[in-house]
Image (cartoon, rainbow, N blue to C red; front, side, top):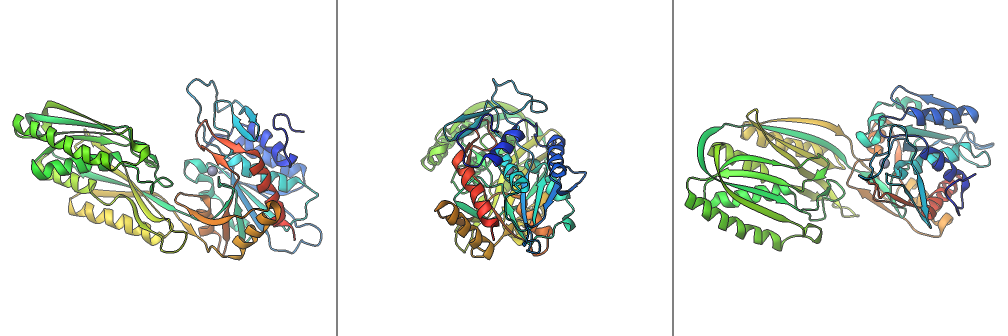
Length: 480
Ligand SMILES: [Zn+2]
């Protein structure tokens, strides 16, 4: 039955994984995969509900004698991130993913593999269609466009769900049970700027070579944020030699730690300009002492020039104040596991020609009140400096108990199925669990997964035996 993947324990979930790989399913293009799932439901006489947002719920009745047990919900997203190598010819709208097996490793030919979250979809289809299994009633929710902002999960009608326990299959680490994920909110701050036309000596600074990374999962790794580094260089100089900013731009994506920043500022005289260069070199030497290994590529270019315009001193001070706000991990959890509780990433800053500077922040926390706190802090500083804020794309976090029955049942099932142990943890990033548990009253959830590496890149791989073990654990969990 399997064409590419060989030497597996469980044929059926791998069969579905192969089939899914043939169906283009980049975010926003899930019609084909929904049709595929719908046909499987029809062929197997299963009740289904598909909505306009390309979500599909498929229900399987409890096995004989287990019809009246409480339902278990399984959940995964049908879309995948579409990334390919520069030299790979691949049209994500029409082409199938080409699978390559190297021993225990499964990868794709020059593209993302789509194990995130094809592994979850495949397991759910296997559970739905294997008539030999003994299971309680199963409710499988396949959501759409998770990778572009939990779009499908946000639009689903959860009155269709009766389960009070959910297993989300969208984690990428086999030996952990995820019991919490972050909520998030993005804030755009707009600072009105003035412009003084004046030819003055100026200094241009370019920062680059930082590692960056995911603004949630990598936020506690001590990596430098290019916008914050530029802010601290400018503030240090400004303490000794008054400067006027003329331009500043850095960062690109809301959910990434910025790696680059470019700024220009003016001073009163050539002598001061020379003094600034010396000072900046000293500041950089200090910053270099404090870099984590991943940031060792850090470099700074300094250029002396003449600028024809700049912001006023008052305006410069306002911008520097925002750049020196607390950044990265704002506080850690007090309970175990000790991980970041709340974080903020100064993701983007732009000098706009329309006479304003826009600054983008992304805040994350497991707790709603902490997201509020981060927003309120930004509102407060904005008010002080005559700026405005706009909060958007907010989604809720989720924090379960590490010793709930659901967690313990999963840990036990994993140990029975594999002889191994798995530990509860939280992730400092978003998952659909936050949104779904906020919509279904009394729903308990965990998130689990097989070992998948380098997600969202063409280097994405999945460990085949890990996928087998997670499937075995799901079956063990569903046994009476
Ligand atoms: Zn995913």
